Length: 373
Ligand SMILES: C[S@@+](CC[C@H](N)C(=O)[O-])C[C@H]1O[C@@H](n2cnc3c(N)ncnc32)[C@H](O)[C@@H]1O
Image 1: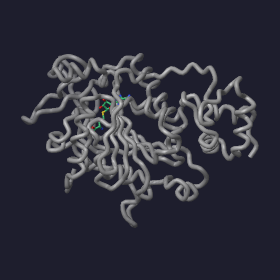
Image 2: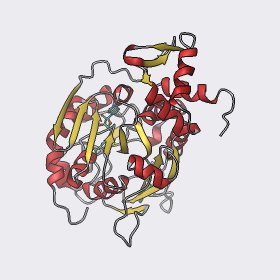
Image 3: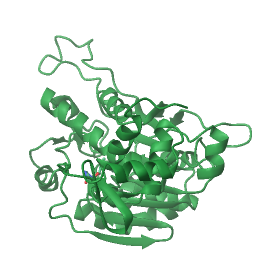
Image 4: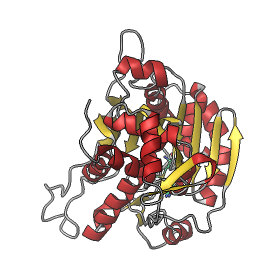
């Protein structure tokens, strides 16, 4: 197919703008082909050579990078130690995932299942200090009405327009870095919430991921349903917001290379694993809040339950082969689910305390026998 003028250049620039250390001709060719159709490696090589040094720079080991591009990491990994631990088929890395994604080889991840931070500030050092000290900050303890202790939740409703803009930029930059490391057809499933899912969806689509729907995790959360503050009695028949009874998990994928069957043959991705011969993978999964026994093994304020995650993680690798990534790993619940299923996985967590929690929690969560979630 004929390409429009500048299409090849734009596709090359797009991939290189998130790779400060450059990429090889083969990697660039693969990426360009996924987005604009087949372009021979020889054409890409001559395009790169012809436009070096005006547009590109030749780095070590036959890698090309953008020349003079003012690269500014959004979340510089200052002070983040870089250590990694392996157990079974899972690898847990302590790092900032933006920096980690920039170093990861292209086309090397087969699926993503993740629960990212939403307030941007809630997992900052300052807010984590306040949460750990038990006072102030964006975390609040929901009212306890049945004698059981509730876990702290961040207040999403307090986000201002500037916070929303920052969130959109965060997810765009994240998806731009994620896209080149995914193999074509890789599923990307991102936990969200009904207030902010539109914004995350827009950012992911803008970066070049294809939207494929949403999975509804049916779970009764502690959000919404309250009467107006300081006017409970006057408006006793009113809830300011609907009581939340589900959680959206956004479903995206990197565009396929060819038809679904071509992509499945070449990369092992491009669909969802069926539950059985009769039952396809569905987009509603019944769940319940994370059980206290799991919380005791993996103390993290946003811990997701194994019962739900194992169903989801099983589904994202259509042939049961490949690497599942959780770039915001927390206590490692996605890794534990992958480990329980016999899948290979990588988790990246920047906070040292949660990294330590995860190193202990993953093997224990993975061994949990589950009847229900
Ligand atoms: C919502 S929590 C994930 C919890 C996880 N689903 C679990 O079940 O334990 C988000 C996690 O992302 C981590 N995080 C935030 N920004 C990060 C970044 N840039 N790179 C890596 N981890 C990050 C936070 O420290 C937090 O532990």
